[in-house]
Amino acid sequence: MKILLTTTSFQDTPGPHHDLLNSGGFEIVRARGPLSEAKMLELLAQHGPFDGLLNGDDQITAKVIDACLPQLKVIAKYGIGLDSIDVKHATACKLPVLFTPGVNETTVAEHVLGLMVAVAKDFWFHLNSVKSGRWDRKTGCELRDKTLGVVGMGRIGKEVLKRGVAFGMKPMAYDPYFDQAFADAHGVTRMNSAEELFASAEVISLHSNLTDETRGMINTKSLSLMKDGTILINTARGGLVVENDIAQACKSGKLRGYGTDVVGHEPIDPHHPFIKIDNVIVTPHIGSRTLESVQRQGVRAAANLVNFLKGRDDYIQANKF
Image (cartoon, rainbow, N blue to C red; front, top):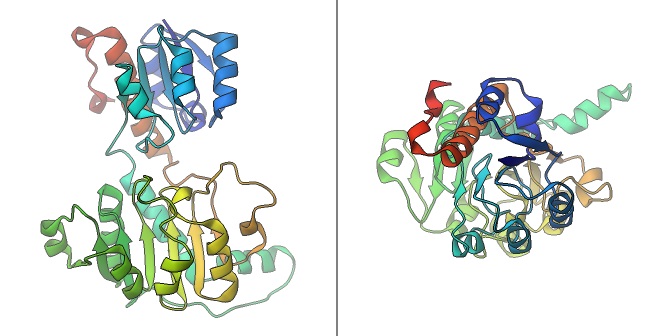
């Protein structure tokens, strides 16, 4: 059987996930994602057909899925977000889509706090100042006693809230499926709507899935509800925000700054408005890219793929690796 492997962090990070994938005895074709629909179709034409995909954030559209059939048996996503995969079309084609929940909440939550500190202390401005041979300084702000608002109280959102409490922040959250028991245990105030949270929080962290309802949820209108000087953090999906509106809010001072690990189209365009704004800090979608997290995700994704293609009689327990 032939596998297409496109996730770069899986390939670039040593660990047991490589041995696990190789144990399947597959022919493995490697490419450097994330790949566009056009690149995926080109790979399929040159190297396909494939029995399985082990992919990251590549565009697995209906057109790509149709081009893979009837040979393709499974899509094994390395990661959690499925917005780059046409899951509805895959389901209609009776094609399983597997993913890896519960593997990266620690490292992403740590990254969120890192971005918060970086924005609060003007890291980008100060790093540029020193690296340019100057000693220009700005006065930052503390996170302690700031109201932390988390939109989306899933695994990652909960870990961010716990770390915010450790920083002495005042936690609040909005989620349609609010976990009241968790909130009670950690002193999290329940917000009745995202709009109520936007108007109340001083630091906002986005942890929503990207759907038709959440796409562009941070825009001129929602920004107008926020307090002047709000810090906004996004480690979820670039599509949750209207980037031009964010840029204007950072320039005007409406936002103290924007810390993000994601942009709408990756990699970032060199002419993107964020490039020249000092209070926008962008990391290249590496919030979950730590040795520990990559190995957890890699093992889970490889186990999903091998287990499915080899059958339940040869079942591998990912937690043994």
